Amino acid sequence: MITIENVSKIYYPDFHALKNVSLVIDPGEFVFFIGQSGAGKSTLMRLITAEEKPTEGKILIGDWDVTHIKKRETPFLRRQIGVVFQDFKLIDTKTVFENVAFALEVCGESWKKIKEIVPQVLRIVGIEDKATHYPKNLSGGEQQRTAIARAMVHRPKILIADEPTGDLDLITAKGIVDLLDKINEAGTTLIFVTHNRDIVNMERRRVVTLHQGEISSDRKGGKYFI
Image (cartoon, rainbow, N blue to C red; front, side, top):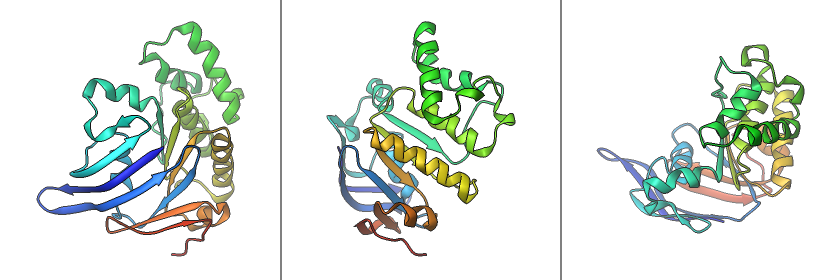
């Protein structure tokens, strides 16, 4: 469970990125966070992943108090939270297999375990046949599937997808959303940050709307209109 209690974030000298935000996300839930640029979506995601700390309020993720987490504990928390970005953030000089394996290597995982885990994850995201390909030889959808595989390699309890379909055409984007649906159905809590109304409207999930740092609406199964 993610619990956000009266959270505010103020950047120097007096910019209120978030203002007294409170909400609860249940385990296994799929939630869209929407809003225009500057609404506070990215700030909130950075607070959830402990990249930054709130100016006021508290964030709890399971038994973790992210607000007061110690620096040495942060890597353990982040293994529980996978993050996927719009621009993929793949390493161009590494193959698909190597990009996904890298997330395990930096944590000291054995090569034997890596060779076991990576093919399984590539199979889940549907690109097991692209293991030896480099990012430049992949389509946008395949690059995003690689990024999702890398984010899922630690089997995180939470997956944050930050504009994961932003650079993709609608058909390819629908394939990515279907994959995220599959991951969510397997038990992973899914946070999907977007401003794409077509994606939101086709899913009929919970929609949290941020406007100027505040939650302007929190609806289940509603539509989002710009």
